[in-house]
Length: 233
Image (cartoon, rainbow, N blue to C red; front, side, top):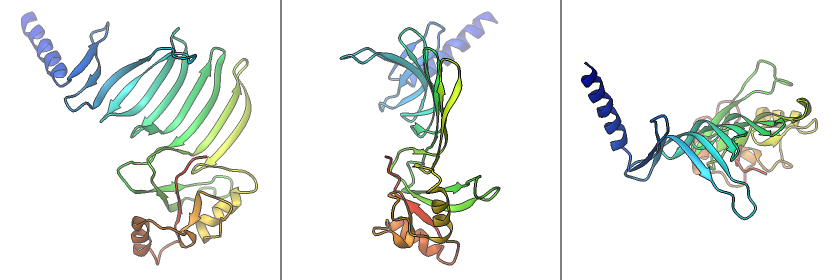
C-alpha cells in the first residue's frame, strides 16, 4: 500500500513538472515559477527583485493564469515586512488593494479591471449619494487594456491608524461636489461634459470606434449610452 501511494505521488509530481519547461521546487516541495513550453507563466510564483541603482529590492508572491497576474498578490521587502496586498484580474488591478509601511496601513485603493479580450466593455454604475438603489446600465467603456480607478480610496496615519482622507472615483474620475451631479446627469441625459476628458456622451464624441457605433445602432431606441476613453491621469 505504501509503495502504491509513493508511486501515485511520484506520478502526480512528474505530471505536474512535466508540463513546465522551467520551474522551481520550494522548501515545502511545491512547484513554483512554472513556465510552459510556450514561455507562458502559470500557477504559483515568487518573484525576487534585487536592489538596483538606489531602488530597494522586494519579493512578491501570487499566481499567474496565461501569463497574467490573477487573484491576490502580496509584496514584501527583503526583510520580510509586508508592503502591499493587491488583487488582479486579467493582469490588471481589480478590487481592493492595500499598501503598508513599517508602521502599518498607509492607504487603500479601489480598481476596476476591464476584460482585455473585448474592444469595448460595459459596466453598471451606481452612485449611492444621488442614485440610492438605482443602477445606470450599459455604460460603455472603450477598452485600452488597463484598470480604472473606481470606488473609495482611503488614506491613513500608519502610526495610529486614524483616517486622514477619503477620495471617491467613478470610472477613473475623482468625484468632487462640482462634478458628481454633472457626471450622473451626463450618464442619463447626454449632457455635454466638455470639461471631462474621459466621460463623453456617444453623440458628442468626435471619433467613435466602429464597435461603439454598431453597439449604439443596435440600441438606438433604448436608454442613452455614455462612453469614455479609459485613459488615466
